[in-house]
Amino acid sequence: MLKQYIRKADIILFIVLVVIGLAASFALSFSRSEASAGAKVIIESGGDLYAKYPLAEDRVIVVPAPKQVNVDAPAVNQDDPASAQYDYYNIVEIKGGTVSVTEASCKNQVCVRHGAISRSGESIVCLPNRLVVRIENGSGEGGGYDSVTS
Amino acid sequence: MTQSPRKTSPAHKPLSASFIARVGLMAALALIFSYVEAIIPYNPGIPGIKLGIANVVTVVALYKFGAKDAAAVSVIRVVLAGLLFNGLFGMLYALAGALVSLTGMILLKKTGLFSVTGVSMAAGVLHNLGQLLVAAALIEDLRIFFYFPVLMFSGIAAGILVGIISSLMMRALR
Image (cartoon, rainbow over all chains, first blue to last red; front, side, top):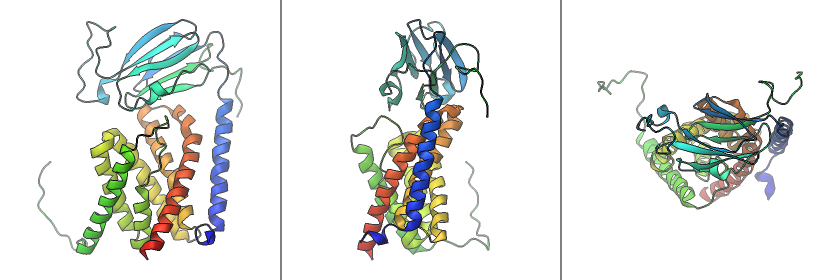
């Protein structure tokens, strides 16, 4: 009875797709490593670097979303930049070597539910506000690698 | 928008009434599926993981009536569902996913090697891939491909399920 639903080519395709998926997760697992002592938290907003903080220092950062994300969003209140009075924002918290997004203006709250990250290479993404929070190991752009060969 | 005078070029063939009626019906059905899926309170925490039950209609349209019907139903459904439930950004992702998976489905069906389930499985994966590409372009960061394996497996699973439902449905419709 199953025969008319599944053919040989389907099974081959299935295996190919699963192998690609496994290979990708295997490759990605290598790009994450323990955060080093000088690891930095990098916050990008709208594709540009917004801020960079050491992972070791606790702090709370309010990141307003770039205005162009929502055309009808009011301009960010420049007189009171520390307030969370923005219509579109994320609040990022660095605490005890972990980073999490504790509050977001967006509807889906995926970034909040993502939980905390603590390892180098991990990231939290908020698509509606075009926010990327990620951890990178200290020393320069090369991250935690001594060298990379291809 | 400016109003352009209605022109009928010789190459332009008007859509037949039966095509319009058929696509309208199927798009309405697909929209209801989208709605049902939107109101089910279940959230796996990762965007993009869902069954996509509305794609059953697209698959059935492709096999019963051809590529043109499937494309019309799929695009109408995505645009309407975007306006009604998912918002403009959601619509952008869904549209990218729908177009990529439609192209894939049409091509795979043409080879004649795959069953409905296989075609649908590929479509599920391609749908997620298309969404991921748009997300990467919007956020200007390729690191979002961390989600790739997760979306790959969820696409396979959802695609197989949709395929099985579609083939059962087609058997009932015959």
